[in-house]
Length: 200
Image (tube, rainbow, N blue to C red; front, side):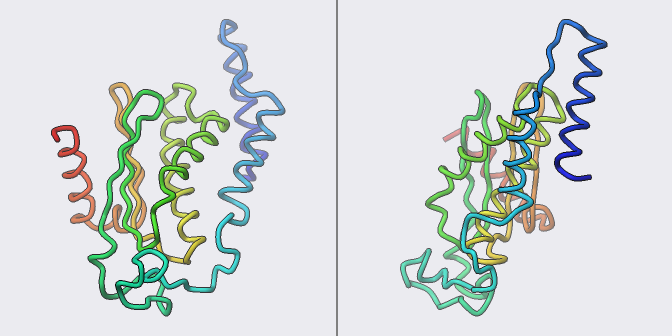
């Protein structure tokens, strides 16, 4: 299903729901649907905003580690010096609730905060913060996709693992990618850190 058809169907379902429940108003108008389609096309479906040459492998030893480690420009992810690409867990307050982002990535992560707030802003425009369960699930999945796409646009394949963990009232949502989805030790380390952070 194309993104346009998806939002047209979503709007139709909302209008049908509003007909059944007259006290509510339609969540999406034509302008909002077009804005949402534009956001999806630019950030998920279309071309990335980062390095236009996706085949060129950057040297993360130089770009992220001040030249202190080996040149890794011949591989997507570095084979040695992995201690220079440790897992990070960053906590945000999104819409009054804690959002934890876990990253295993060789790239420079100095722009992570800017990226997360940019994604959140677009997620709001897409209707993913409307207080519904599926919308909140979409929020986490959208956040994960955008993070992966952003860093892989800097160096193809450099994003090894992403975890988006959002706790909202009486519900926790986890969207995992890569090593944080497939490797038990990585997920265990992430949740151990999340469990530690509130007690520091």
